[in-house]
Length: 622
Image (cartoon, rainbow, N blue to C red; front, side, top):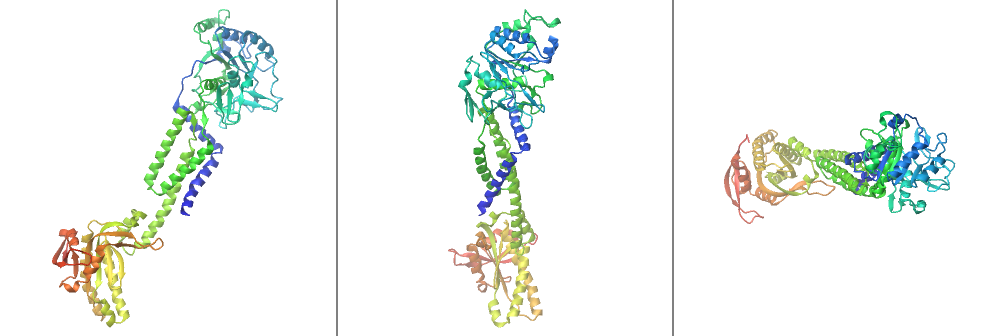
C-alpha cells in the first residue's frame, strides 16, 4: 500500500504536466526552448545548390518602377538564367492576378525559353495571415500547357507566430496539390510526370529517392540552416543588367556579365522572391528567438529544398514512448528523493536535468532528433517540491515521535540534538560503545515484607524520581525500571565520547543525594534503604528492539549481564560509597576519577576474572 502511494505522485505529476503541455502557454514555452537549440547550434554551411534572386526595394528604386514588373522583366530574367546554366527557376511570387497581366501568356512565352520553371499558385489572405482554403472552388484550374508546374506558395505560422513546419500537400475533395518545395524537387530532373512517382503516406512523403518524415499528415519540420540571408542573394537588377539592357543613370554596370562569367548560377536552383518591405513577406523562424529578425518567405522555401537535397531532416521522438519512459524514470527519481537528504536530492535532480538538457541538444545536433525540452525538467522540479513537502511532513512526525518517546528519558540538550539530527536509521539496531549504570535498592524485597505497601511505594517513587533527574542531568538514558533496580545507558541514543566518565559522575552525585533522601525518610518516620551502584562499559547492540507497532529503544549485550552480576556482589566487599566499576570503565574514565582496586572477580559470561574498583572521587569540572 505504501509503494502504491509512492506511485501516485509520479503518475499524477506526469498526467498533470501532460495536460498542461496541451495549452497555448506550454506550446509557446516548449517551442521557445526548442528554438534556443537552433541558436546554440548556430548557422550550418549552406551548399551551392540554391541561390536566391530577390525583388527588393532597391530593385524598384533602380528600375524606377512600381509593382508589378512587366512580363518582359521576367522573360529577360529567364533568358539570362538559362544562359548562365541554371538547373531550375522557382518563382516564389504570387503572379496569379489578372489585373497585372495575363499569366497564361507569360507562362507560354517562358516555357518556350526554359523547360524547368515552377510557378506559384495564388495566396489567400485572412485577417492578415496567409493560408490556403482547401476547397475545389478556390484552387485554380490547371492550365493545359506542357511542362507546366505550379506549387502552393503559402507557409503557415504556429500559434506563437513562428514558422517551424512546412506543409507539403493540400487536399481537396477530388485532388491533391503540392507545395512549391515539393514541386521543385519533383520536377528537378525534368520529368513531366514526376507527380506519379510521389508516395504519400501517413508518416512520410517520398519524392524519388528522398523520403521526407512528417510530423503530421501534411507537414514536416524545417531544419533551418541559419538566420535570414544565410543563402546567397542576388538582386533582380543584377541579373537584368547585361550588355543588352540599360539601367537608369549610374547603375548600368553590366553586372550579369561578371556573374555569368564566374558561373554563379550554373547548375543551381534559382528561387525568385519578393523581399520588399512593402509586401511584408517576412516571418519569424527559430533563429528569431532572441532578436526577432524575420526571414523572407522565399528563403523559407530555400531552407526546405536544401534540407531535402541534403537529407538533413528533423524528426520528433515518439511522444507515447517518451511519456512511458518519463513515467518509469520519474517514479525512480521520486523514490530516490524520498530516501535521500534534501541537499543530495537537490544535487541529484540538478545533475539529471543538466544531463538531460545536454542529451536533448546532442540528439538535436547529431541525430536531428527533437526531444521535448521542458517536460522532464518540469516533472523533476515538481516531484522534488512534492518530495520536500512529504519529507517535511515525515520530519515533523518523526520529531514529534522522538519528543514523545524520549522527552522523559534524556536531557533537553540531547533531545534537541536528536531532533536536529533525526533519522529512522538512528533507531536501527547497531553496535555502540556505551556505559551501563545500574542503581539498586539493596534490601527492597525484604523491606516489602515488613512494611506497608503504600510506604514502600512512596519510598520507591521518591527514590526513582531523584535518581532519574540525576541520570538525565548527566547525559544518561533511563532504559528500564525493574522493581527495585534502575538501569541507565550513557552513550545512547546520542553518542557521547566520554560516556564512562558521565556514568561515574551520575553514580557519584546519586550517592551524594542518598544522605538527603535518608534524612527525609527518617523525618517521615520511614525506614531508609541502602542503595548500590554498578557501572560497566563496552559494546552493545542498541536500537529499536521492539516490533513495528511497539517501539522499544534499548540495548543488549554482555556488559548489561556483567553489570547485573556485579550488583549481586555488594555483600562481598566493604565499601564506603557503594559504587562498583569494572576495569574497562576505570580505564576509559582515566584521570578524571579516583578509584580503589577491590579484587578480581569471576562473572558468569566472562572466561577471565574481571578487576573491580570502588569509585571514590571524580573531577567535577570535567
